Structure formats: C-alpha cells, structure tokens
Image 1: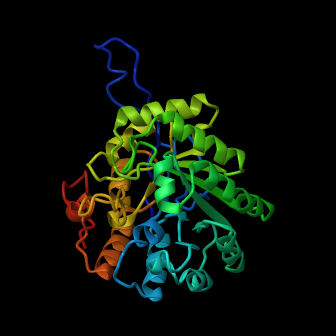
Image 2: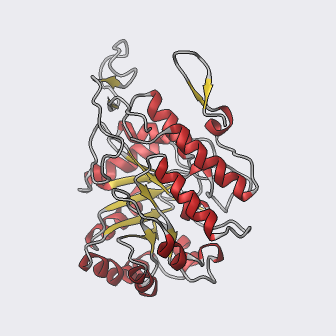
Image 3: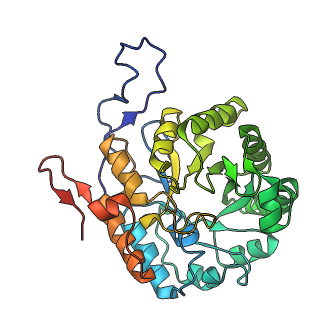
Length: 351
C-alpha cells in the first residue's frame, strides 16, 4: 500500500535576520492525507508528481537486449508501486535506438491501468503516426538549449527542431493528448560548455507556444547546482511560465541531483523526473551515476513529509527487478542501504 505522506510547504529562502529560525528548515504544516491513487492531473503546493522515465530513458542506451516480457513486467511493477506517470517507450527509428525497436509491440501488449499516464517520446510525424496506431494518448518531444547539442544529435538547430515539432504537437492537440516538451542541456552542453538560463527559457517558451502542457528542463550532463536551479526557475517564472508547468530532470553524475531537487522545491516546483535504480543517464561521462534514482527521491520526500503517493518498498522491488534483468548491481543509495524505520531504527526494503 502506498504511503500517505503528510504535506510540507517547502519555504523559499528566508529574508529574515541570520538569527531567525524561519529560514533554517521547511515549514511543516498539519498533515493532509489523500488517497495514493490520486489522479495524475493534480499539481498542488503540498504534493509532488514523480514522472518515471526508467522504461524509456533508463533503458534506451543499454546494449544488452531486453525481452519484451521483461519490459512489460517492469511497467507493471512501477504501476504497483503507485507511480502514475510512466514514460513507456520511444517511437524513434529502430535503427537509431535498437533497444526500443519493440515500441509498437510494447504499447499493444501493455496492460494499461486507469489513472496512469504512459507518455511516449515522438520525434517526428512518422513517430506520431506510429503513436496513433498504438493508441497512445500522451507524448513528449525533445529539443535543447544548445544549438551545438541539437546539431550534433539530430542535425538541426534549436529553431529547426522546434519547427519540426509543430505538426506533431498540433496533431496531438487535435486528438486531445497530453503533451510535454523537454529542454535538454539546460545547465551545460558537452560541446559548447555553460548554457545561459535565457537560452533554456527561450526554448521552453517556444514549446509552450506550440501547445505543450509542461516543459521539463534537463541537466543532460549532470553539471547543474542549486543556485543555477533557483536562477533558471526564477527566469522561467519571470518570463510567464507557471510553476505548475515546469518539471526538472536531474542527473546524479556529480552527486548533486537531490540537492537540486531541494532547491527546486524551495522555488515552488513540484514535478520531478526519476528512474528506478538510477538507470540511464549521461553517455558523456561513462561509468558515472545516471538519472536521479526514483527510490532516492521517494526517500527524501518521505523524510521531509511531502506527499507523493508512491510506495518506497514497491519502487525498490521494481528497481531490483530491472537491475537484475540488466545484469547490473543496484547502484542507488537507497537501493544499497534500504529505507529507514524511524520507530525502530532498522533499515527497510532491503529485499
């Protein structure tokens, strides 16, 4: 059963005197309990949305073939854990990402559950046609805040990539689908270095003009730090983007992912991407930590009493399952140490 976490309002940085306690910790308000199966549409100040990317971003660069049955079981375990937004696969060319070449078969076989959204990545109108045939109802598109990155990866400038998404997003809008837009390299690019917040915000604004429901800023190479998160959030909100339209996708490449989550929470953001087991991540830093692990995020949110509706033990089951399926050790911090029972002091969920 998913944990019903008490609500916390993560206060913004205090402007009070150094001796005041008001800026020293989050302000804890009386518990507000909600059902763990609350629908995905709710984004409130006292609840965090966890957007699971393991089945798509976590697996796409794996060289070892993963059977379709394994992927389907993984998706079931994620749903069992209480996750309500699970990015299932990508309709890119099979030659580009062989690991996700079974996207059509996966969506056809996926036992979809009420109240769960299964977005798919769609790069172009060919992918959109496949998504329609697969009865998808939510999509994501990718651009970046660095022309050097988009040129190297998709042979387009940022502007050209956004123009190419226009018919995709228009068609999805006609169908009434939910739409997300990713802005990769929001903090730094492996080819051109530091990225100015204005560049990331400009790409996000264009995506919103094209009809996306939310924008997700991605720390593609894991170089972002809390002051940058606060600055980017302030720039985005100052440009007219609502806090409820902003998500963050942090990589733990240099150990800053949870610190960045805390900074974003303090800035009013309530939607975060994560990948069970920390799978996936940065191909530009081989051997480094990957995506923010879902179990690490859930542990943090539980500890500071922010509601999210996801069961830590269930996430650990899914994380161990996919790690074993990949033939890899479970590398996340909570995956190794387990949770912690405050009443007894004992570790929990260690298998």
